[in-house]
Length: 277
Image (cartoon, rainbow, N blue to C red; front, top):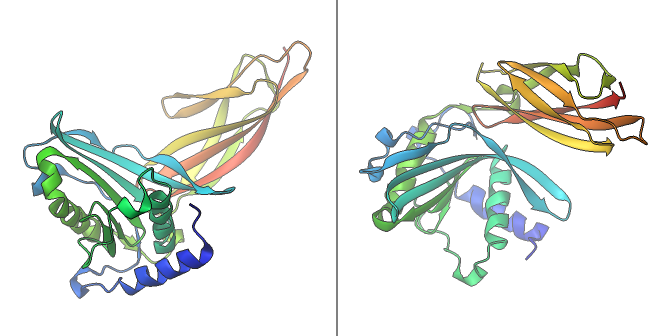
């Protein structure tokens, strides 16, 4: 079912009206970065072992009818046994509005009928708005999705509240410019390049908080076979495929996505041409 603009506006008004913060919870801005969820700070996970620690962010595409947008996810898994475990997705968006849009679309595109979805919690269990006893909640621009099984299912509210406290203690910012990375330079050192060779890619990214950067790559082949990107230590190389017998060149758009530890990203695109030997 498609979400109308009027529906999103109504939900947004309800959401923002629920955002009254305890003074002790307010940091200095409303844009929050990803935080590390440590099992030592979540007593509701007692007995569990950490399997996935949200060590690497990944992009998740959302949107309908061509109105797509990318979000960043971190995945955590803690387990006691095959039937007693917790999975948590931490989704980083760029605004409160985008967080609400994501969770609204996720619920409306669920395979579960709308009337069977977990209702909004009254009062909120965690964050600014929550559903299903805290299973899904939003804190500013961060969405938390909890899937708990076995003994941990009865601890969902505590899990949500303890995760929310970790988020609240984390850093926050006034503007995206304070938290998003910037691509200073992105180019290939030779262009055109010869088929079946590797060519160094120059890339320089500045992060306003000196956080680690994670790279993802998108390829849009225009003509021919395109290529791949290989990493050797801290350097990246474009590996050019062979050209077709009846095609003189390959042509491809290469996009780099630079994601920082806080879960914010930027991208840049270049066009690479490959020629025969």
